[in-house]
Image (tube, rainbow, N blue to C red; front, side):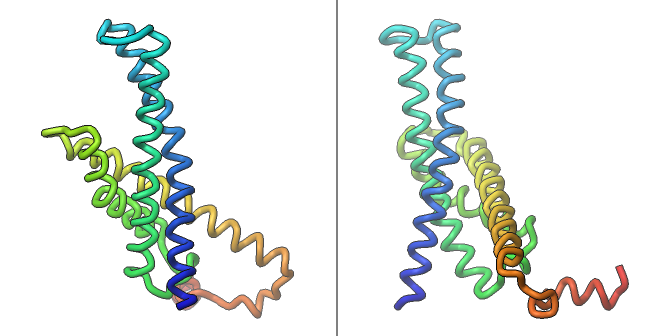
Length: 175
């Protein structure tokens, strides 16, 4: 039971981290879309400043929701697919692929239901997949950095750390 609670907490944490990062990306995109609407005269309501801020707010909240769902989905998919592997045993490319898959498959329906689009979902899904891949690669880089720092802080002896299977293979081949 403790293992499942830990995984749920991890999925919620990953979702919150992604939501925070995607919130910022949505705000920037919303500002650009709002400015574009004001410049080209497509602002149908309110003042130009109100249009820009409303657009930034809408995109921020939308992207944060997609980021939360994508991050939680990524964490769940990773736990199921990679099982007991440690972060140092996973490749960055594979980690990013799981992040892209989780974002594309689970954040896309949320986006489509909010925007009620009839087409173009492959383009939007591609953007979400790229954001998911970038977010997961960043998460792995941060996790590896935290592991390295933890090893240095505890003063672990090199002999106690051991080699990963990849490092053992490199030693045998002589690369």
